[in-house]
Amino acid sequence: MKKSILKEKSYAFAVRIVKLVQHLQENRKEFVLSKQLLKSGTAIGALVREAEFGQSKPDFIHKMTIALKEGNETEYWLCLLKDTDYLDLKLFNSFYQDCGELIAMLVSSIKTAKKSIAK
Image (cartoon, rainbow, N blue to C red; front, side, top):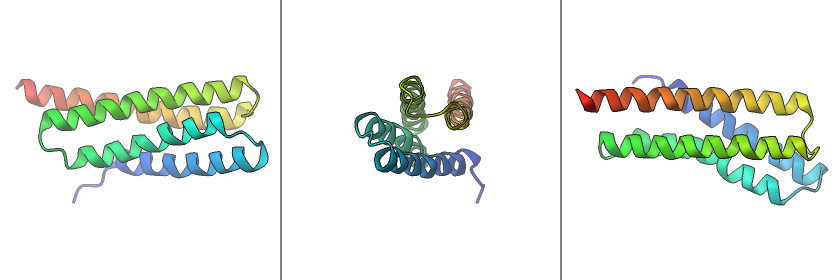
């Protein structure tokens, strides 16, 4: 079976997000923004998993596109947490870079899938 880097990275990112949210809630007493981050940040990997067994190529593309939207939303919450001083720059940069990599991988997967339909 072919190893999926996107599947692995999105899962690892979700684990990091869960731990970050635990930190924000326990140590910074931040509950509202962190809950939003938890939802969008873990949804990326869940949608990648859903897409893996999509009913059709269009279904796969649809689920990956929703994962892409969740990635974009995750970037928003990360920026907001940084700009409201809940995240320091070093921690923010680490998460932002990982999220950006996931977004790039999702864009690439969607483009490849769309090309295969057009043929």
